[in-house]
Length: 322
Image (cartoon, rainbow, N blue to C red; front, top):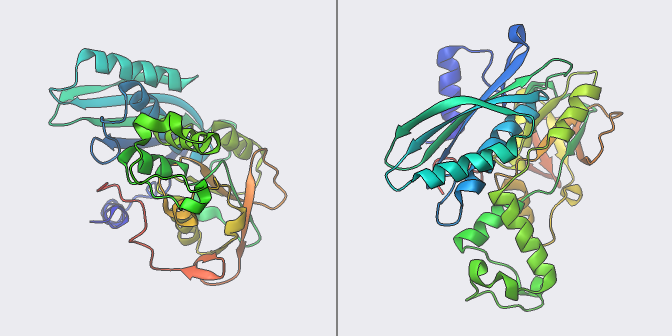
């Protein structure tokens, strides 16, 4: 079972013009709407995620969808399906985290019900007033491709938390990781490795939505543009834009911002970074953006370091398993 195949089935049945981007753009109401879910055992584990962190992440991943549209995040509703092992203190800490992540965004409702494990569902609403809204179908030949932040950090953080991290020893001055417990022994790491490790954990457990990057583009770009977030991985985000716009995106991987301890496979295919990738006119300047490629003439898809990716389903972020 693959997420995008299911989305296509739903889109075809509903014959909806609103399905296909991070948000549904309701022009008559001047809003965008997005809905996202987090499922215990699929998107998080309570063995390494606190209630506070989970509340913050719930808000940020939904605000990220609004940012991907170019709209201003305004309102959220959050619904919890709670198992017997979740107590009142957990719910209190969850909403403290959610409130701290909101900033000017307001939580205006939701629902609570019982369940066999923890399910979280949130709906986000953004205002389109004074903003030019993006669409994945707006990339054009001659546009440049820009990204926010570093890529692959969240996936590396998950590797650490789940005990699956494997690192080439020569990169770490022969530091031995074979029996190393990151959660217990992080203080023993050399300073340079400790810095990256802390960043990886922060990226996975407490991501930050790129509101300023989004605002700069939507308030300053006068032409149509494409933008999405990298919640399912950078490669997937780029491929979705390429397919929706029927264009070829040429990527220079040497320009993609990433930590020295993150391999390019993780940079391209690791999910849950919640950075933004935008395809915009060449003359648009955005503070904090890194240009990683351009839209070129050719077959629809991606051209990455002279390799044209076509069959990458086995590497893509999967919302149905961990």
